[in-house]
Length: 318
Ligand code: PBG
Image 1: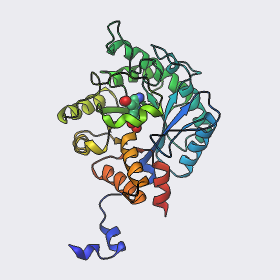
Image 2: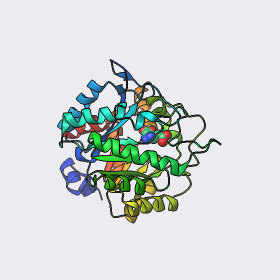
Image 3: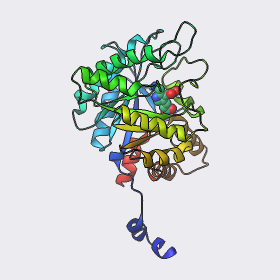
Image 4: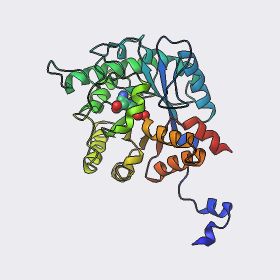
Protein backbone atom coordinates (compact mmCIF):
# COMPACT_ATOMS: atom_id res chain seq x y z
CA UNK A 1 0.00 0.00 0.00
CA UNK A 2 2.91 2.37 0.57
CA UNK A 3 3.84 2.62 -3.16
CA UNK A 4 1.10 5.21 -3.78
CA UNK A 5 2.00 7.18 -0.64
CA UNK A 6 5.68 7.66 -1.54
CA UNK A 7 5.54 11.24 -2.88
CA UNK A 8 3.13 14.15 -2.47
CA UNK A 9 2.36 14.03 -6.20
CA UNK A 10 1.41 10.34 -6.01
CA UNK A 11 -0.80 11.05 -3.04
CA UNK A 12 -2.50 13.82 -5.04
CA UNK A 13 -3.06 11.40 -7.90
CA UNK A 14 -5.05 8.97 -5.78
CA UNK A 15 -6.76 11.30 -3.28
CA UNK A 16 -10.46 10.43 -3.09
CA UNK A 17 -11.81 13.56 -1.46
CA UNK A 18 -11.45 17.17 -2.54
CA UNK A 19 -11.90 20.40 -0.62
CA UNK A 20 -12.37 23.56 -2.64
CA UNK A 21 -13.37 27.11 -1.62
CA UNK A 22 -16.64 26.77 -3.60
CA UNK A 23 -17.71 24.06 -1.14
CA UNK A 24 -17.36 26.34 1.88
CA UNK A 25 -19.98 28.69 3.26
CA UNK A 26 -19.08 31.35 5.82
CA UNK A 27 -21.57 31.90 8.65
CA UNK A 28 -21.42 35.57 9.73
CA UNK A 29 -22.99 37.54 12.57
CA UNK A 30 -24.16 41.14 12.30
CA UNK A 31 -25.23 43.10 15.33
CA UNK A 32 -27.54 46.09 15.39
CA UNK A 33 -26.25 49.37 16.79
CA UNK A 34 -22.52 48.76 17.20
CA UNK A 35 -19.80 50.89 15.61
CA UNK A 36 -16.89 48.45 16.01
CA UNK A 37 -16.86 44.68 15.47
CA UNK A 38 -17.36 42.87 18.79
CA UNK A 39 -15.17 39.82 19.43
CA UNK A 40 -16.94 36.64 20.58
CA UNK A 41 -14.89 35.30 23.49
CA UNK A 42 -15.99 31.69 23.05
CA UNK A 43 -15.10 31.74 19.34
CA UNK A 44 -11.63 33.30 19.05
CA UNK A 45 -11.25 34.95 15.64
CA UNK A 46 -15.01 35.32 15.05
CA UNK A 47 -16.78 38.64 15.59
CA UNK A 48 -20.21 40.19 15.64
CA UNK A 49 -19.92 42.46 12.62
CA UNK A 50 -21.13 46.00 12.13
CA UNK A 51 -23.09 46.48 8.93
CA UNK A 52 -19.95 47.95 7.41
CA UNK A 53 -17.52 45.22 8.37
CA UNK A 54 -20.05 42.59 7.28
CA UNK A 55 -20.01 44.08 3.78
CA UNK A 56 -16.22 43.82 3.76
CA UNK A 57 -16.33 40.20 4.92
CA UNK A 58 -18.82 39.41 2.17
CA UNK A 59 -16.68 41.07 -0.49
CA UNK A 60 -13.69 39.08 0.72
CA UNK A 61 -15.73 35.85 0.67
CA UNK A 62 -16.66 36.56 -2.95
CA UNK A 63 -13.03 37.27 -3.87
CA UNK A 64 -11.97 33.99 -2.30
CA UNK A 65 -14.52 32.09 -4.36
CA UNK A 66 -16.48 30.78 -1.39
CA UNK A 67 -19.77 28.98 -1.91
CA UNK A 68 -21.77 31.50 0.08
CA UNK A 69 -22.30 33.52 3.22
CA UNK A 70 -24.92 32.59 5.84
CA UNK A 71 -26.15 35.61 7.78
CA UNK A 72 -27.30 35.76 11.40
CA UNK A 73 -28.69 38.99 12.88
CA UNK A 74 -28.55 40.14 16.48
CA UNK A 75 -31.21 42.78 17.15
CA UNK A 76 -30.85 45.54 19.75
CA UNK A 77 -34.16 44.60 21.34
CA UNK A 78 -36.02 41.30 21.55
CA UNK A 79 -39.64 40.53 22.31
CA UNK A 80 -41.88 37.49 22.79
CA UNK A 81 -42.89 37.34 19.12
CA UNK A 82 -39.46 38.05 17.64
CA UNK A 83 -40.81 41.07 15.78
CA UNK A 84 -37.37 42.12 14.57
CA UNK A 85 -37.29 39.09 12.30
CA UNK A 86 -40.19 40.25 10.15
CA UNK A 87 -39.43 43.98 10.23
CA UNK A 88 -38.00 44.98 6.83
CA UNK A 89 -35.79 47.41 8.78
CA UNK A 90 -34.70 44.67 11.20
CA UNK A 91 -30.97 44.04 11.38
CA UNK A 92 -30.94 40.74 9.49
CA UNK A 93 -33.06 42.10 6.65
CA UNK A 94 -31.05 45.29 6.16
CA UNK A 95 -27.86 43.22 6.33
CA UNK A 96 -29.12 40.92 3.57
CA UNK A 97 -29.73 43.97 1.38
CA UNK A 98 -26.29 45.39 2.26
CA UNK A 99 -24.53 42.18 1.34
CA UNK A 100 -26.49 41.69 -1.88
CA UNK A 101 -25.63 45.27 -2.88
CA UNK A 102 -21.97 44.46 -2.21
CA UNK A 103 -21.62 41.08 -3.95
CA UNK A 104 -24.52 40.86 -6.41
CA UNK A 105 -24.61 37.44 -7.99
CA UNK A 106 -20.92 36.73 -7.31
CA UNK A 107 -21.63 35.05 -3.96
CA UNK A 108 -24.77 33.17 -2.91
CA UNK A 109 -26.35 35.04 0.01
CA UNK A 110 -28.12 32.92 2.62
CA UNK A 111 -29.91 33.90 5.80
CA UNK A 112 -30.88 32.05 8.94
CA UNK A 113 -34.66 31.81 9.06
CA UNK A 114 -35.45 31.30 12.72
CA UNK A 115 -36.81 33.30 15.63
CA UNK A 116 -34.32 32.44 18.37
CA UNK A 117 -32.10 35.47 17.80
CA UNK A 118 -35.17 37.73 17.97
CA UNK A 119 -37.23 36.35 20.85
CA UNK A 120 -36.73 37.42 24.46
CA UNK A 121 -37.34 33.81 25.58
CA UNK A 122 -34.74 32.56 23.10
CA UNK A 123 -36.87 29.81 21.56
CA UNK A 124 -37.01 29.20 17.82
CA UNK A 125 -40.76 29.78 17.70
CA UNK A 126 -43.72 31.43 19.37
CA UNK A 127 -44.83 30.14 22.75
CA UNK A 128 -48.31 29.07 23.77
CA UNK A 129 -49.73 30.43 27.01
CA UNK A 130 -48.41 27.25 28.64
CA UNK A 131 -44.88 28.00 27.51
CA UNK A 132 -44.53 25.27 24.87
CA UNK A 133 -43.40 26.09 21.33
CA UNK A 134 -46.45 26.49 19.08
CA UNK A 135 -45.59 24.74 15.82
CA UNK A 136 -48.25 26.04 13.46
CA UNK A 137 -48.38 29.60 14.76
CA UNK A 138 -44.62 29.69 14.23
CA UNK A 139 -45.01 28.53 10.62
CA UNK A 140 -47.00 31.66 9.86
CA UNK A 141 -44.18 33.84 11.14
CA UNK A 142 -41.58 31.83 9.21
CA UNK A 143 -43.61 32.32 6.02
CA UNK A 144 -43.65 36.06 6.62
CA UNK A 145 -39.94 36.06 7.43
CA UNK A 146 -39.20 34.27 4.16
CA UNK A 147 -41.03 36.96 2.19
CA UNK A 148 -39.18 39.77 3.97
CA UNK A 149 -35.83 38.07 3.38
CA UNK A 150 -36.77 37.48 -0.26
CA UNK A 151 -37.65 41.15 -0.68
CA UNK A 152 -34.24 42.03 0.78
CA UNK A 153 -32.63 39.96 -1.97
CA UNK A 154 -31.62 36.69 -0.32
CA UNK A 155 -30.69 33.79 -2.64
CA UNK A 156 -31.38 30.99 -0.17
CA UNK A 157 -33.35 31.02 3.06
CA UNK A 158 -32.11 28.70 5.80
CA UNK A 159 -34.95 27.56 8.05
CA UNK A 160 -33.25 26.25 11.21
CA UNK A 161 -36.04 26.11 13.77
CA UNK A 162 -37.04 22.45 13.34
CA UNK A 163 -40.78 23.15 13.23
CA UNK A 164 -42.71 20.41 11.43
CA UNK A 165 -43.81 21.53 7.98
CA UNK A 166 -41.55 24.59 7.89
CA UNK A 167 -40.19 23.91 4.42
CA UNK A 168 -43.66 23.41 2.91
CA UNK A 169 -44.96 26.58 4.58
CA UNK A 170 -42.02 28.66 3.35
CA UNK A 171 -42.14 27.22 -0.18
CA UNK A 172 -45.88 27.94 -0.42
CA UNK A 173 -45.41 31.51 0.81
CA UNK A 174 -42.57 32.20 -1.62
CA UNK A 175 -44.40 30.67 -4.57
CA UNK A 176 -47.56 32.55 -3.63
CA UNK A 177 -45.61 35.79 -3.84
CA UNK A 178 -44.12 34.78 -7.20
CA UNK A 179 -40.72 34.20 -5.61
CA UNK A 180 -40.12 30.79 -7.11
CA UNK A 181 -36.54 31.98 -7.61
CA UNK A 182 -35.65 31.92 -3.90
CA UNK A 183 -34.17 28.57 -2.83
CA UNK A 184 -34.40 26.76 0.50
CA UNK A 185 -31.38 25.38 2.31
CA UNK A 186 -33.23 23.37 4.96
CA UNK A 187 -31.64 22.61 8.30
CA UNK A 188 -33.34 19.23 8.07
CA UNK A 189 -31.47 16.97 10.38
CA UNK A 190 -30.62 19.09 13.37
CA UNK A 191 -29.85 17.71 16.77
CA UNK A 192 -30.29 19.20 20.23
CA UNK A 193 -26.56 19.58 20.84
CA UNK A 194 -24.31 20.72 23.66
CA UNK A 195 -21.89 21.90 20.97
CA UNK A 196 -24.01 24.97 20.14
CA UNK A 197 -22.78 26.61 23.36
CA UNK A 198 -20.44 29.21 21.84
CA UNK A 199 -23.06 30.21 19.25
CA UNK A 200 -25.43 31.15 22.04
CA UNK A 201 -22.91 33.77 23.16
CA UNK A 202 -22.41 34.84 19.55
CA UNK A 203 -26.10 35.75 19.21
CA UNK A 204 -26.60 36.92 22.83
CA UNK A 205 -29.13 34.14 23.27
CA UNK A 206 -31.58 34.49 26.13
CA UNK A 207 -32.59 30.82 26.07
CA UNK A 208 -33.46 29.16 29.37
CA UNK A 209 -33.74 25.39 29.22
CA UNK A 210 -33.22 23.49 25.99
CA UNK A 211 -34.66 22.80 22.54
CA UNK A 212 -35.35 19.10 22.99
CA UNK A 213 -39.04 19.33 22.05
CA UNK A 214 -38.11 20.38 18.52
CA UNK A 215 -34.47 19.52 17.81
CA UNK A 216 -33.58 15.84 17.47
CA UNK A 217 -32.35 13.33 19.99
CA UNK A 218 -28.66 12.49 19.52
CA UNK A 219 -29.42 8.77 19.64
CA UNK A 220 -31.42 8.72 16.39
CA UNK A 221 -30.10 8.21 12.89
CA UNK A 222 -33.13 6.68 11.08
CA UNK A 223 -35.19 9.62 12.25
CA UNK A 224 -32.55 12.00 10.89
CA UNK A 225 -32.81 10.43 7.44
CA UNK A 226 -36.60 10.71 7.65
CA UNK A 227 -36.35 14.41 8.50
CA UNK A 228 -34.21 14.97 5.40
CA UNK A 229 -36.57 13.00 3.16
CA UNK A 230 -39.57 14.93 4.47
CA UNK A 231 -37.86 18.22 3.71
CA UNK A 232 -37.02 17.12 0.17
CA UNK A 233 -40.67 16.15 -0.32
CA UNK A 234 -41.71 19.58 1.02
CA UNK A 235 -39.49 21.34 -1.50
CA UNK A 236 -36.05 21.76 0.06
CA UNK A 237 -33.39 22.51 -2.56
CA UNK A 238 -30.57 21.48 -0.25
CA UNK A 239 -30.75 19.69 3.08
CA UNK A 240 -28.39 20.01 6.02
CA UNK A 241 -27.04 17.85 8.80
CA UNK A 242 -26.04 19.68 11.95
CA UNK A 243 -23.80 19.45 13.94
CA UNK A 244 -21.23 17.81 11.67
CA UNK A 245 -18.46 16.08 13.61
CA UNK A 246 -20.47 14.12 16.14
CA UNK A 247 -22.92 13.14 13.38
CA UNK A 248 -20.72 12.03 10.46
CA UNK A 249 -22.58 8.72 10.34
CA UNK A 250 -25.88 10.57 10.00
CA UNK A 251 -24.35 12.73 7.28
CA UNK A 252 -23.36 9.64 5.30
CA UNK A 253 -26.81 8.10 5.73
CA UNK A 254 -28.52 11.30 4.57
CA UNK A 255 -26.17 11.67 1.59
CA UNK A 256 -27.05 8.12 0.51
CA UNK A 257 -30.80 8.66 0.99
CA UNK A 258 -31.59 11.89 -0.87
CA UNK A 259 -30.99 13.25 -4.36
CA UNK A 260 -30.41 16.91 -3.51
CA UNK A 261 -27.13 18.52 -2.42
CA UNK A 262 -26.31 17.93 1.24
CA UNK A 263 -24.74 20.52 3.51
CA UNK A 264 -23.19 20.01 6.93
CA UNK A 265 -22.65 22.68 9.57
CA UNK A 266 -19.30 22.59 11.32
CA UNK A 267 -20.74 24.37 14.34
CA UNK A 268 -19.46 26.75 16.97
CA UNK A 269 -18.46 24.13 19.55
CA UNK A 270 -16.51 22.18 16.95
CA UNK A 271 -14.69 25.36 15.99
CA UNK A 272 -14.06 26.29 19.62
CA UNK A 273 -12.58 22.89 20.49
CA UNK A 274 -9.95 23.10 17.78
CA UNK A 275 -9.17 26.75 18.55
CA UNK A 276 -8.83 26.06 22.28
CA UNK A 277 -6.59 23.05 21.81
CA UNK A 278 -4.45 24.93 19.29
CA UNK A 279 -4.16 27.95 21.59
CA UNK A 280 -2.80 25.61 24.25
CA UNK A 281 -0.28 24.18 21.81
CA UNK A 282 -1.95 20.78 22.02
CA UNK A 283 -2.66 20.40 18.30
CA UNK A 284 -1.27 21.91 15.10
CA UNK A 285 -4.00 24.35 14.12
CA UNK A 286 -3.91 24.62 10.32
CA UNK A 287 -3.66 20.90 9.53
CA UNK A 288 -6.37 20.28 12.14
CA UNK A 289 -8.68 22.73 10.34
CA UNK A 290 -8.13 21.14 6.94
CA UNK A 291 -8.46 17.62 8.34
CA UNK A 292 -11.73 18.57 10.03
CA UNK A 293 -13.23 20.02 6.85
CA UNK A 294 -11.96 17.16 4.70
CA UNK A 295 -13.54 14.63 7.06
CA UNK A 296 -16.91 16.32 6.72
CA UNK A 297 -16.59 16.23 2.93
CA UNK A 298 -15.52 12.58 3.04
CA UNK A 299 -18.58 11.68 5.12
CA UNK A 300 -20.77 13.02 2.32
CA UNK A 301 -21.19 16.78 2.57
CA UNK A 302 -21.32 18.59 -0.74
CA UNK A 303 -21.26 21.91 1.12
CA UNK A 304 -19.67 22.72 4.49
CA UNK A 305 -20.66 25.70 6.61
CA UNK A 306 -17.63 26.68 8.64
CA UNK A 307 -16.32 29.68 10.55
CA UNK A 308 -12.94 28.85 8.98
CA UNK A 309 -14.27 29.23 5.41
CA UNK A 310 -12.19 32.28 4.47
CA UNK A 311 -9.04 31.07 6.18
CA UNK A 312 -9.39 27.56 4.74
CA UNK A 313 -9.80 29.03 1.25
CA UNK A 314 -6.52 30.88 1.74
CA UNK A 315 -4.79 27.74 3.03
CA UNK A 316 -6.04 25.81 0.00
CA UNK A 317 -4.60 28.42 -2.37
CA UNK A 318 -1.08 27.88 -1.06
C1 PBG B 1 -30.77 28.58 15.26
C2 PBG B 1 -29.35 28.21 15.00
C3 PBG B 1 -28.41 27.73 15.92
C4 PBG B 1 -27.22 27.54 15.21
C5 PBG B 1 -27.46 27.92 13.90
N1 PBG B 1 -28.79 28.30 13.78
C6 PBG B 1 -28.49 27.56 17.38
C7 PBG B 1 -29.40 26.61 18.00
O1 PBG B 1 -30.11 25.84 17.35
O2 PBG B 1 -29.43 26.62 19.23
C8 PBG B 1 -25.93 27.04 15.81
C9 PBG B 1 -24.71 27.27 14.99
C10 PBG B 1 -23.45 27.00 15.73
O3 PBG B 1 -23.44 26.51 16.88
O4 PBG B 1 -22.39 27.29 15.14
N2 PBG B 1 -31.04 29.88 14.73
